[in-house]
Amino acid sequence: MSILNLKALYQTVILENAQALHHCETLTGVPSVTLHNPSCGDTINVQLVIKDQTIEQAAFTGDGCTISQASASIMTDVLQGQPVSAARQRIANFSKLITGTQLSPAAQHALGDAAVLATVAEFPTRIKCATLAWHAADQLLTMGDATNGRTN
Image (cartoon, rainbow, N blue to C red):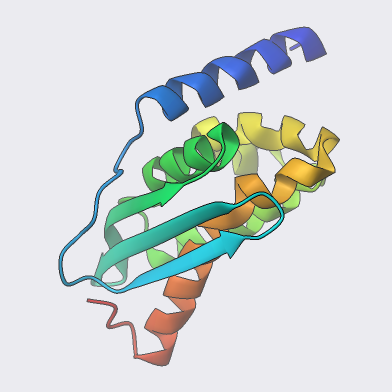
């Protein structure tokens, strides 16, 4: 795929997700992590329902730029339904991708639409925007480990 086609796909995916956010809701009685990016003002609150070591439901709320909102929306799609171990790997791979590390085709495929966010690596000031929700999800998964997997 040419760089122009990739950038067009990136813009399309970002705009579609920002205009019609997926899983943008508050789940009652579910632990959450809220992170704030002081450099641009983005705030994201992420919630995960984990049962039997599988992310049964992922949700977020927050305010921020188009990239942070779209990335959070995409993240919920990528993580929902995944075993915790696979979700952790996807979060780690997304962090690598967004900072310019080349991933295997299989790892990119596992990220789904999130893989097009690789072009954010060209804009270092936007990396924090794109990774904010992913960092919050990672913190929730770590909290789950601290409570023997009970995050709900």
